[in-house]
Image (tube, rainbow, N blue to C red; front, side):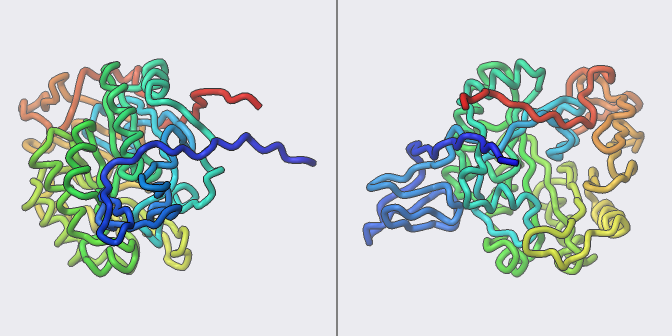
Length: 371
């Protein structure tokens, strides 16, 4: 039996931003703290930013590893237009080197044939509107490394009244950080652990730039921000570390910022580490709640209590979920508890349970290519 291969989507050479000529003649990328310095033809650590002659280019502009309509809760975002659908897509590459990467086929690929879909920014926005999505998410791999593409998509989304979501590790320099998030309406930031040792040894990066991104988002922007920590047995799951992480979020960001604690599964270069037991997530959630965080969720496991959003004042359940399906929603249209009228932090609008997207995942093809 012969195999028919889909046609290759050629690399792009879109002009990249955020770089300068170093004293030794190399071009230095100023996008993220890696500060890659490149000779002609070399690529940065992310693999997708490349020097061509005397300029830097983005090789994945207009190219994608695939498009899919998801529930917004899957990003995960629990307080950003619950029950709505989001058109999700990513490209390839990553500026971190996580040994536990859960999307390594996309983020760690060095095979550009993995990018078999293509679409202009306008086509993505138009498709999201046509599909009834409330927002577009830059996800699967880190959108920071394809910022030029994401910014153009975001501009076309805003022209159509669509929201934009960045799912990111937050590893980015200050100047591009400000430009990138000015175009976003929501972000879920991976706070992968709370020690420099973990970041350095298991991700090839550093903790402080991520903390800086979180403080910038919460205190200097209107971007709705939630946090995800992948809880990895034996590496970042101690009571002490979870407690310090939660206390930092409480003190530096505020107790209203949602924290998602997600289960790890063996992947990439950490196949020998066991999956996170549900009990570990329940324990970590209790530690974070006891530390004063108001909204702590669990992910990648079935846990209705860990999926429920409650009022911070009277503790009445406001949104009950089963996985990504909303079973009960009693928030007023303006996002207030109907019992005590205290507002819930987040972005909300009138909700019709019969119109929610639910737990579906619908792959879509934006543009058919000629064979």
